[in-house]
Structures are given as structure tokens and as C-alpha cells.
Image (tube, rainbow, N blue to C red):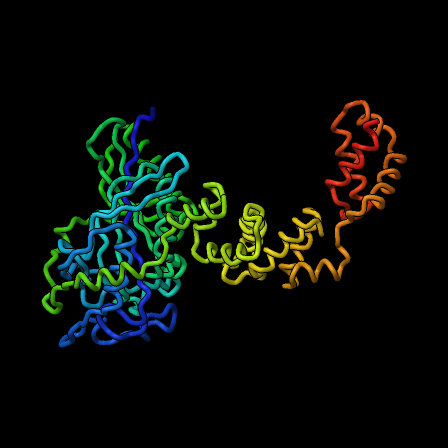
Amino acid sequence: MSEFETVIGLEVHVQLKTRSKLFCDCPVDWGGEPNSRVCPVCLGLPGTLPVLNRKSVELGVRAALALNCRIAPFSQFHRKNYFYPDMAKNYQVSQYDLPLSADGFVEIPREEGSLRVGLARAHLEEDTGKLVHFAAEGFSGVDFNRSGVPLLEIVTRPDLRSPEDAYDYLKVLRNLLRTVEVSDCDMEKGSFRCDANVSLRLSGSEKLGVKTEVKNMNSFRAVERALSYEVSRQAELIRSGGAVVQETRLYDAASQKTFPMRSKEEAHDYRYFPDPDLVPTELDRVWIEEISAALPELPSAKAGRFQRDYELGFYDAGVLTSDPALAEYFETAARACANFKTLSNWITVELMARLKESDTPIESSPVPPEHVSELVGLIDRGVISGKIAKSVFALMCDERKPPSEIVRERGLVQISDESELEKVVEKVIGEHPGPAEDFASGKEKALGFLVGRVMKETRGQANPRLVNEIIRRRLSG
């Protein structure tokens, strides 16, 4: 039993997929010239009045329903006051004690039983601006293009017990949010950002330890590594008689370490109070039911259906449904293929490896799903061997042609003519009497050598099943 128990809670900020900002009509677009997508409202200039974006509330409700949250019929925006240069008005509009939704959960699928992660809340707020540091010139600039962009902040309960749990939770959460189309969840563009709270306590204790907050993590793997370092750092500090200080720390990807940033603020430090320029939000129950009815099939349900309808294992179904675009790709291919297990292997192993090498999303795959189905069909009908299929698949990726066309152009059809193969087998046996005698005397390993020589003689085009049968028949007497 470990000396300490790790306790982790995550705060994920998700940029909602709206065309305009939370309280004004400035466009929400990634990139662009600094401070080119701002107006008096999102800059908080005197005399301006914010107006709540209805679409952001709709997307917030969609996400909350998918997260099994209780939707609040009445919610309210507060001003979160702080003096950093990334908000021109020196406060952020967020939700405090009356959030949009609360008390949800996310299930992390595990073959031995799922792990349920409780959600304390999922509330709406506006994003802040972005500091840009010009080290050589000795100053920093502020880009307010991002300020006012609608966010959904999803806060877990302290239910995660390892960095690996945190990694898995983020993957499941991202897939869920992309499936219900509330965000593209692109970490590189900052539309899916995570802060982590981590503490240690003695194993068996109910009392939580002092927590630190870790920021500046731009990938799932970075979150896992930052938490692993922080767990080790805190454990070593406690063992040596030191005390963990409640603070915010930054993660440095180059050194894979965390460093102090500032002391951790509490809620009272922000001096929350209701925003006097925004009326409370009341949601119509019929509207919520309409949003719920329009939700697509969620990943967990889809994984179960893949196991039932396509007779796939837990792992294969989980991989295929880990991304909505990948699941759609498989289902499109499956419409023209009955060998679902082999189809799954070609997509999750061969195709995904190719796409990873070139950093290409499945939506931009050079091989359409129908071509993968066709390739599996050629193998199943004995037109080409599995070995030839790998060469054909590489050409499919490079030349973007259907497999049947590649096979025809290059003369790659599998040799399944028994009389033709018998001649090749006789030749190989005559040239390699030693291995032939070994196999005839019961040494099974010699068969692999003989089959390999036949495949070499036929440039890999011989039907390996027939070759095995012919050699066994020829040498069994």
C-alpha cells in the first residue's frame, strides 16, 4: 500500500462554438491582428451595456445535459474582481453561487468497471485577454481579441487519484464535448484549457492535504507529466519534514517541472458580487427538453452499440468511438464491409499510424472509408494476400487511388492456382532438401522457412494458406 493517496481535481475551460462573444457581437475567430476584434463592450468602456449571447447559453445547456448535470432554472452572473492586465475593466464576468448547472458526472470507461468522476459545476464566463511578452525589447503587450469569448468552466470534484486518471478524464471529456458539438476543443488554439489542483494525504485518511494549482499545460500528456512531477515534489517535501504551501504553480514543458507563480487566491479574494448590468437568467423547461431531444448519440452509448452491432471487443470499440470523426469514418466503411474486426484493425492500426506520422486529422484522410472496405474485401476474397495488402495500402495513401486499381496496374493479384503453386513448391523443396527433411521428420519450424522461400519466389503473391497446404501434403507422406 502506498504511503500517500493522491487527490486531484481539474478545472477545464472550454471555448464555446459561437460566432460572437458572450456579451457583444465581436467575432470569435482564432488568430488575427492583435486588438482587431474588440469593441467598447468587451473592453468594458464606460457607458456600455453587455447583452447575453443566447447561443452560448444553449451550448452550455447542451454540454451540461451531456455531462449529466442538473440545469438550474435560475442563474446569475457575477463580477470577479482582480487587477491583472489581461482584463481592461479589471473584473471578469463569471458565475459564482448561482451557476448554469451543477452536480454532474463523467464516466471513464474501464474494462474492469468504469470510474465515475463527479462534477461540482459547469458555469458560463467570459475569457480574458492574452499577454504577449517581448523579452528582447523589455516589455509586454496585451491582445484583447480573446477577452469576452464565451467559456464553459467545468469543475470536477476531487475524485481523481492519479495523473493517469486525469489524462483519461480529459480524453473522455474532450470527446464528449466534440460529439455534442459545443466546442472544437483544440488545445493548440486555446479552446480547451486545463488547470489542475493536486494534494497528498496519508493513505486511509479522510482529511484533504494542502493543494497546489498547476497552470500552463497545453496537452493531455503535459497535464499527466505536470501532475506526476507535482505528486513526487509534494511527497518528497512531506517526507523531509517540510510543508506544502497553497499556491499557483506553472508547468515548464522543457524541464517537465513546476515552478511557483503566486499565492493561491480564495473566493473572497475576488470580491464577487452580482453584475448590476446583467439580469438573472431564467430557462424555460420546454426549451431545455428541446435541446435534450436534439442531442446526438453519446460516446458511451456508441461504444456499447459498436460492441453489439459490429461484434467488436471493448478496446476496439473504445478506440473507434474516442473521436466522433473516427467513429463516423468506421461506420461509413462498415456499410460496405462485413468483416468488421479486420476493418477495425486496418483503420485503428495501419491508417491511424499513417495519419499520426503526417499529423493529419481523420477528416483529411488521404484514404476514403470506402477504399478501406474495398481493401478488406480483396483480402477476404483471396485476391491479394495480407502482406501484399500492406504494400497496396501504402500506395493508396500516396497515390490516392482505390486498391483494385493499384492491384490491376501493378499485377499484384494473389496466386491461388494450385498447379502453379505446386511447381514453385517442388522447386523450393529441390533447392532446400535439408529443411524439407526436417519438416518431414516433425520439425514444424522448418515449414516457416519453406513457405518464406515460396513467397520470395512469387514476389509475395502466393496464397500463403494454399502454400501451407501444398507443402504439408507434399511432405506428409
